Image (tube, each protein chain N blue to C red):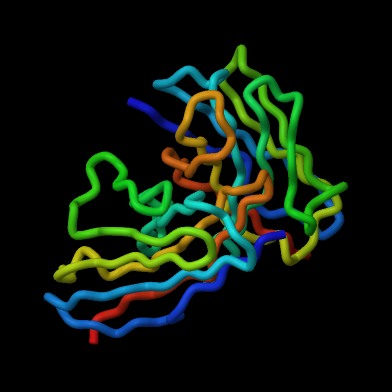
Length: 107
Length: 122
């Protein structure tokens, strides 16, 4: 199965900061990658699919890039509502896998 | 409104069985691949199983193969997860989730339910 590794596991940042989260796949997955945001006690929310396509209704401060095995999620100008845990997910195979998550917390 | 609502969670003894349900509304359920994803307390997301629109194909994470069965009733707009030989490590919130593209399995999960908690403990 394809393994997904996110870094960092925790990211401390301040309101207004620009942050980047990295996701690495154990084998090439093209652009079959999604990013989700999850807040405590809530279901995950789709932010980006196909590595860089913004889901409808998601603000443009979220952006994704990459292909093959290396991917990034960038959040420009962090706001209080953005402090959450972010997950990448590959869907290149029927056996989908998530990264372990990156918690973005207030510094 | 497009919606998924899970039910069936609760407390189950190790070795026991349970069936989770997910009721879909607001979209043509029979056109979409569907999934179960779980999250153990304080842990990350783990994809569990997926099923084709017509129910004729399904795939599982290795840790549940032979113990869990995903199925669907398109006439009732219901997705199921039948779980048997439950273990403590199956304790988690279980979410159902829809694949974004109609008729195509290789896409992200755009609609999620609120989750149902399953606790496996004696």
